[in-house]
Image 1 (spheres, rainbow, N blue to C red):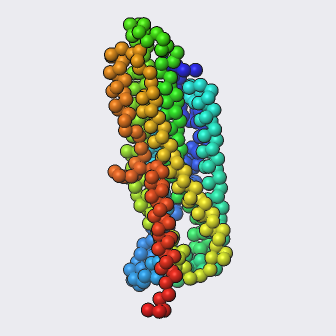
Image 2: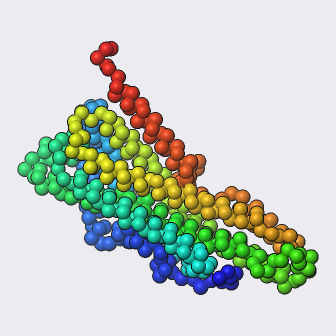
Image 3: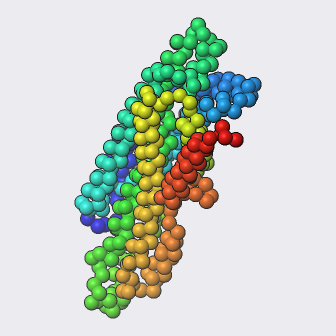
Length: 394
């Protein structure tokens, strides 16, 4: 049912169609046992990273850097994710608590079903991706030959604490069960929070494009121009829509403003980790025979997460673009001068649509995804060419 009256507001938590996403993004890292484990992992990473940095500076060996750069960068990524998790949870929770949340049934059955379908898909993504990431964690936990060539802490344990090597090694490997949860947390929080925001924009868009319903009759345009009751109703609806959009954008800008710098660091660390992994894969002298399962589950998790983050950012852009398109398509011929002026201001304010920024010049959308995909392909191509060069001829 289309209504331009104040909606019955509800708490996001009470009618959250993305409840599985909420558990896996916001709640899981707040559990006290999880925080305790993450704090231990953070302290361990700091100690091991300092030791590795010292050893690298002492040896200053390029091969040593290439061999362990991927795990070194991953450790920094994990550490940053652990530190950032409480802040991301806090900002997201504050934003959603401040959001005047419309129930999904407030715009009619069609929009409700559409949102429910999308929510099922997003919740399924959270569950499947988490399961695959945990499987990847188990795969990395199981010892393989030459693991010391990949995980520098194992070499450190053997060299500096041989008596405690087995205990320390298994303590380190057990952390792989928790690491996927925290490494994916920043992406999960973004997908969950901004998907809820997008659903609210969808409800708003449905209302906006029906702003004339059922008032406007093209055959009575002249009569409606002089109908003060009709003009007052249009004015009320326009102001209602402006107020609602202002509120939604205020909440959205609060979130993106708070996490923009965190998102930038996540993006930088992701790029560095990607470079380190690609260099390692092309320079590794051992065999991948027993590592394919690790690689496949890792690539599936990372790729699936990256794709859904890009889709999430782009779909928000598309949904906010619809606001401008819906405004342009409105039949305003029967509106009086005052309402047309309000309409023009409303239209002008929506010429630039909302984006999810990670820096001053980059936003999360298909353009960013394509750019990163091209970069990855270029790196793989360059590394392949370098690997195929026969240096013995020089």
